[in-house]
Length: 416
Ligand SMILES: C[C@@]1(CC(=O)O)C2=NC(=C\c3[nH]c(c(CCC(=O)O)c3CC(=O)O)Cc3[nH]c(c(CC(=O)O)c3CCC(=O)O)/C=C3\N/C(=C\2)[C@@H](CCC(=O)O)[C@]3(C)CC(=O)O)/[C@H]1CCC(=O)O
Ligand SMILES: NC(=O)c1ccc[n+]([C@@H]2O[C@H](COP(=O)([O-])OP(=O)(O)OC[C@H]3O[C@@H](n4cnc5c(N)ncnc54)[C@H](O)[C@@H]3O)[C@@H](O)[C@H]2O)c1
Image 1 (cartoon, rainbow, N blue to C red):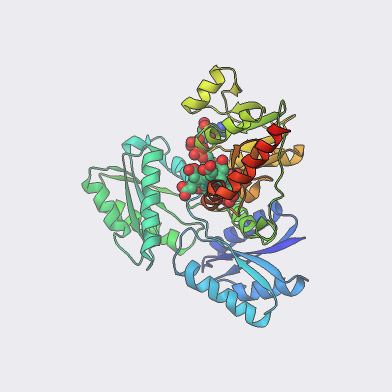
Image 2 (image 1 turned 90 degrees about the vertical axis):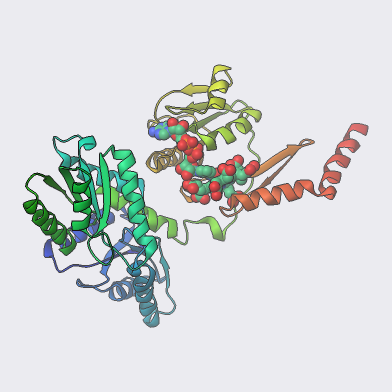
């Protein structure tokens, strides 16, 4: 069994909202069959987070658990309340190890889920002829509010909306009626209101009520309401990612990588993604004689040139399962975490080592900061601190004693 996962949810007075939240917990549990999964609540619903923690930790011989805050932003619950609940649980189980994961954040999967809800609300409207009034919770933490405004901007640019007005339901300005007034003053007559909430509850209810009241007072404008994110695979996947990132055993921090020199001459290496990271790494793979297949719909000019010169094979398309067949080594370096995860999963099945560029613990190999000279390759691997590894490599290389060791040995060989 793996480390138990406690999902720290907000809690609600709304029975339907609580049920949706519990269904999400069940979905995560189905997707993580090896781990015990429980939901604990900050307030309004039961069990409390300390109770949920005490219960699972008591049953666990190793006394471990990971707490994932089921929260979109970094308000007071994430910063203060949930850590305090963990401390409270630890008072009765002081020998336990309870790790606290990051909040959900602006993960592309959640942005996708939001976009699906927005598309459903738009119906027969084109986004370009509509204004999105995007409602956040509002918090006392400026950063959390700023994150909401940033996300609104992302939806504006990626969704092709006529305009987007970020606003808040509580705590801070502009409030939802202000957001609607601003949209109206800007000429909007087709308005989609979305409350950026995870589950149904009072926030959703207030959003709907305020939007409907505003619409009744503005008969020349039409307002459509988008649903909350709710219980869906995208949300469950992000929860599981936060859990895995935090698992004490999943990060190799405790045990160093086993550094080896791969002899790749003539061996198949599959590189998925052809952006900045792949460009940096492919030349080195070619230098080592690897037989490189590049899979990506778009490639940097440098990689296009290598393909045109016949130095590598470029499959100009998205990754498909099966692409790693026969590969000895793979690089997952697209800008889509789902694709990188799928490449890493196929590599795992194929027993090929794979570097995952966006989330290193999700792969089985890491790229060293390396440099070759005089037939010696110096390679440094740290614990996800590439700049430090690069600096260590450069310092080693610059050291006169190192140069002397490399070149004296070389001269010695030439004389023999
Ligand atoms: C050494 C080097 C070799 C090479 O790449 O050739 C290398 N990364 C380099 C540069 C670099 N990496 C990053 C930036 C942007 C940083 C910024 O802007 O602040 C830059 C700078 C740039 O791009 O200029 C970001 C980054 N890196 C990783 C993650 C994901 C994660 O940690 O989960 C993210 C966040 C991605 C995101 O934000 O999503 C992960 C890894 N990077 C590694 C190697 C592996 C072992 C690291 C170690 O030893 O500790 C490891 C663990 C796995 C792997 O990918 O192999 C090369 C410098 C060598 C040289 O200069 O010669
Ligand atoms: N490990 C590192 O050293 C490091 C350094 C910087 C960034 N990163 C991370 O690595 C990832 C890639 O960064 P980048 O700067 O190279 O990105 P990029 O945007 O320059 O390139 C992304 C590439 O992925 C391709 N792609 C997108 N969807 C694909 C699919 N379905 N199948 C195949 N290819 C697909 C695109 O066509 C493009 O070639 C990012 O997630 C970034 O956060 C890692």
